[in-house]
Image (cartoon, rainbow, N blue to C red):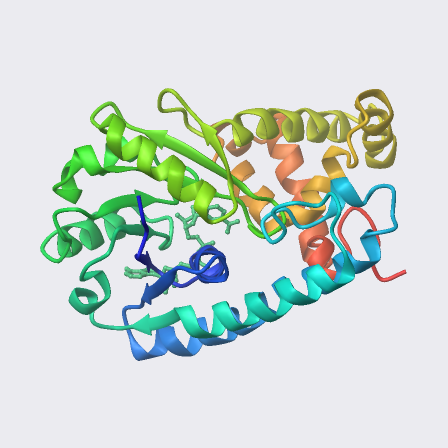
Length: 321
Ligand SMILES: NC(=O)c1ccc[n+]([C@@H]2O[C@H](COP(=O)([O-])OP(=O)(O)OC[C@H]3O[C@@H](n4cnc5c(N)ncnc54)[C@H](O)[C@@H]3O)[C@@H](O)[C@H]2O)c1
C-alpha cells in the first residue's frame, strides 16, 4: 500500500520524532496540535530532533572505518551499511534535510489535518481520559480508509478500541525514544484488530525504516519493557540491599552477556525521573518497611542532588568528565 498522507496527533517528544522519520523517508506528514501554544512548544522540538538526525548521519562518517560501525550506525537513517561511502552519506544528508523540510506540516484544525490520511498515529500525553476525548473527537473526521494507531507505552489498545469508532482499524504502534537510532516499532493489535490493518501497519513501519516487532497478542509493556523492566528492577534491588555497587552490577552484566551497557547505564539514559515515577506507582513502594520504598528514597536522593541521568550530565555515572 502507498502511504501518501501520515498524521501525528500530538507533537511532543515522540510525536515530533515519528513525524520527522516519516518525512525523512519521503512521506507527506502532518502533525495535528491543539493550540497556538502547542505550536510554540513543538517547533523547537522539531528543530532539535532534526539537528540530532543530521548530526547522527554526519557522525556516521567516522564510523565507516570503525570495526564497531556496523553495530553503531543509526539504523533508522541508513538502510544499508555494507559498502556505504562518505559520498553516500552526503547524499543522504542532502535528501534527508530536504525531505524533513518539505514533507512536514503543522495543523491546528483537526478536520483538515486528518482529511485523506492513510494512517494517523496518536502520540499525545499518557492520560487515558484525554486519549478517549481525542478519539471521540477524531472519529468524526477520519476517512473510511484511515488506520489509527496509538504510540502509548503503558496503555492497551483494547482500552480505547470502542471510543475510536473503528476497532478493526485500530492498534498500537509503539516506537522507542531516539527513533532514528533505536528503530524498533512494536506492532500490537487488540482482539478486534483486523489482519489487514495489522499487516498494513507492519508495512508502514518498514516504510519508515523501522524494524517491526510483531506481537501476536496484547501484552502490557510490549516485548521490550517486559524484558527491560524486570532487569532494571533486579539491578535496583541489588543496589538497595547493598549486595554490590552499580558499577559492579553493570560490569557483571556487560561481561557475562556481551551487552554494551549495564542496567544502571540504561537507567541513566532513560532518566531517573522516569524510573522514580515507575517506582512510585508500585503499591509496595508506599510501605516504609519495604525494599521498594527504600529504592524510591535512594532514587529521590539522587534526583534531589541533580543526578538525574545522562542528559543532565550526571546520574549513576558522571558524563561531564
Ligand atoms: N517519551 C518516550 O520515551 C516515549 C516512548 C514511547 C512511547 N511514548 C508514548 O508516546 C506518547 C506521548 O509521549 P511523549 O513522551 O511524546 O509526551 P510529551 O509530553 O512530550 O507530548 C505529549 C503531546 O500531547 C499533547 N497533549 C497533551 N494533552 C493533550 C490533550 N488533552 N489534547 C491534545 N493534545 C494533548 C501535548 O501538547 C504534546 O504535544 C505517550 O502515550 C507515551 O506513552 C513515549
